[in-house]
Length: 89
Image (tube, rainbow, N blue to C red; front, side):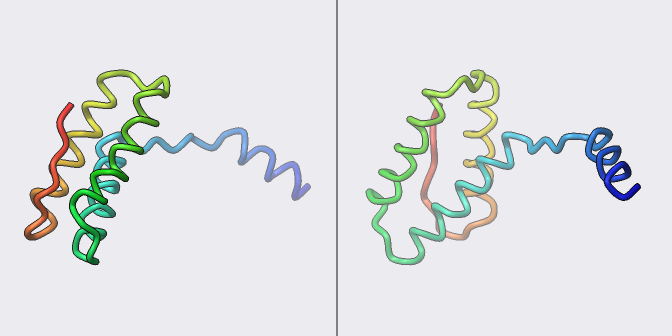
């Protein structure tokens, strides 16, 4: 009975969808903290460039990539004092 209930819950569970803005905001938070922790701006941009190349080589639509960039820039500009990092699309 327990297995049947778990199987039913699994089949009826709604999938979770994180907005692409959230992904960009998370990347910005990590990047700004790296910068504050002593990494150079060049080192941080190197990490971001690697992440960006992986995203561009994935089947992610253009609109979602643009949302990631907007989320990144929003987070870096509004939630991290003195974080000069910005991305362009």
